[in-house]
Length: 252
Image: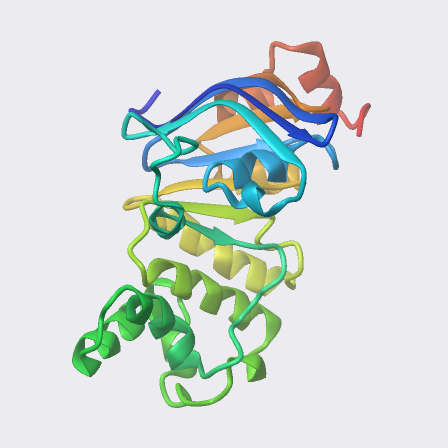
């Protein structure tokens, strides 16, 4: 296994009295793509959003255990949550462009973090739109509202926006579920390219997609970590009966 980037230790998450994640312990490898798989409602998105503490926004949430990044527990009281979320950008299921121009969507994060020079912002916007495979489609319309883009283009714009603040990790919550097949392939291709420089964790309910993209796989079932390991092993020759049954479509 590659060097771990994120160490999850005995993580439990409760929504009021409901236990959503039960004693999760797993290492997320650096500069690889990790797929979190499992049936709907099994805790995949909760695990993903625990990594950058977006679950803090859920009323009644309680967390125990640790998520270590660089040896620091992200749930420690002294952690700068804003900086944590900069380091771990999230790409949601549905594109969520800001109500502003294409250019300003990408420049928004760097501006918030203190970048003021237009030449530097211009370079960042171009670089990130290239990285999201969108530059050639929008370079002559950067001042147009982002909402005029197609859904697939909007999702790639959200990817560019996440990259603009120089994250270490990309968290992707079923990032292609709302897209047509061609747009989905665009996003998949970019994730494969971006893993050279970023650790990528993505939730998917599409096993074919997990097989195409993942280097490492994590299988959750009703909040429990059933099996994890190199994707080729977990997705083709799993050792746990519940994983085998899920891959065969016998449980969902």
